Structure formats: structure tokens, C-alpha cells
Image 1: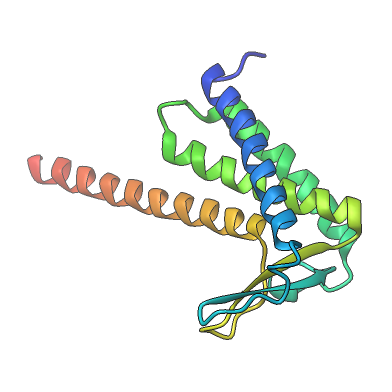
Image 2: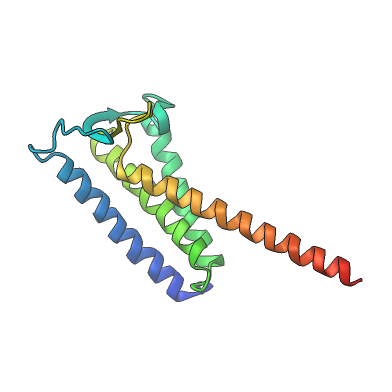
Length: 165
């Protein structure tokens, strides 16, 4: 079976690899002795070993979260392979960010049996998170925003057609 668009699959793989490496490099930098316990009014670097999911949910469910992540990565690939055209940049970008973030956290769960969170926002009471969490949130946000824009455009188009009749 051929992919819907080869460019989209190539972009998906290459950008996922680049984003994975970016996330790993940021985590490595966070262990720099000059940054450990770094603090300013906006954020601080604090290492927390998270055996759960987002916001500490599913604490000590590493195996379940790993299986869920594997299913998500496979599902995202199938979606991109079968459905996404390179011209649909917002969808492709959102799915790529979601894949890279999910894969990054999955690799940490498999390698360390936990995810390493290190970014603490000091101006708000919020759970500590990592770069891969940011990628997942950005991917979901971009996808939702563009789905809502598409729905709004469909409604506008539908209302125009209704008024013409």
C-alpha cells in the first residue's frame, strides 16, 4: 500500500527525529551543574522522576503508559501514512509534535522506568514538566485550533449555500 503523500511521511519522520533529539539535548542541558537548582521569577530547573502520566496521574503505571504510548505512535503513523497530505501543514505539524513528544516520553519510560521532568513554572502553581510534554500539548492545541477553524469555515460555507437557495 502506498502512502497518501510521500512528502508528508518523510517530513513526519525527519521532524520527529529532529524534535526527539532537541528534547534529549534540552534534558541533557538541564543537568548542567550551573543550571541545577537554577531559579528566576519565571521558571526554575528542578529534576523530578515521574512514574505517572500528565499532572502526576496514573502514578506507578509505567507499563500501562508505555503500552498506550506505543499504540499512539503506531496510530499516528497510520493516520499520517494513509490520510495526511503535505499541503495540510497544520495537521502534519500537530501530529508530528504529538508523535515526537509521545515517543520522547516513551523512550524515557523504557530506558529509565520513569520520565524526567525538569521545568517548573514559578509564577503559577503547575506541575513540573519536560520538553516532550510541551510538544504533546502544542500538538494537541494546534490540532484542536485548526479543527475548530475548519468547522467554522464549514459552517460559514454551509450558511452561504443555505442563503443562496
